[in-house]
Image (cartoon, rainbow, N blue to C red; front, side, top):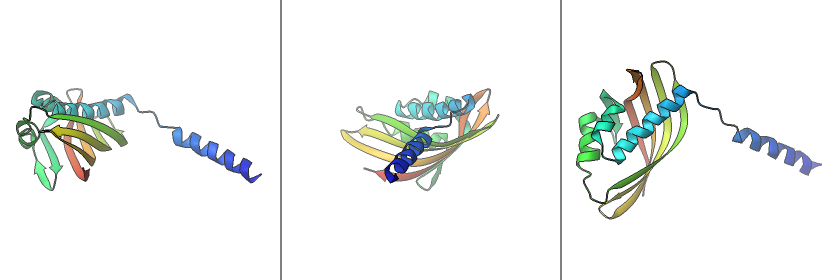
Length: 149
């Protein structure tokens, strides 16, 4: 009898764990904006980076406050290694969006190759986005380094 009760509980729990709340179109668009912004960083594409960010973006990285110029300098201009490659993967934790503002929290893992060396970096990040001219744009990004290997 105990085995049957355990099996029923296990099946019920697995069903609940697999149930994921579906995202609204707004939430999907917000997440896509974050992904595309990091794609622009990976491709060292400052024009696209500006498309997915506000002009007055602020980034809180490594205890410093960065603006767009700092981001371009540190992530694009200084990353001119011929073999540079960055692949990002996201685990979205929470995405909240209304008509003009959104908040996203996620885990980001990036596999980075530069100057023949490979590294994997993990962050926990929170992003605030605003809607400008019908497009979501990153306004604030706060990043906490979790692990670098």
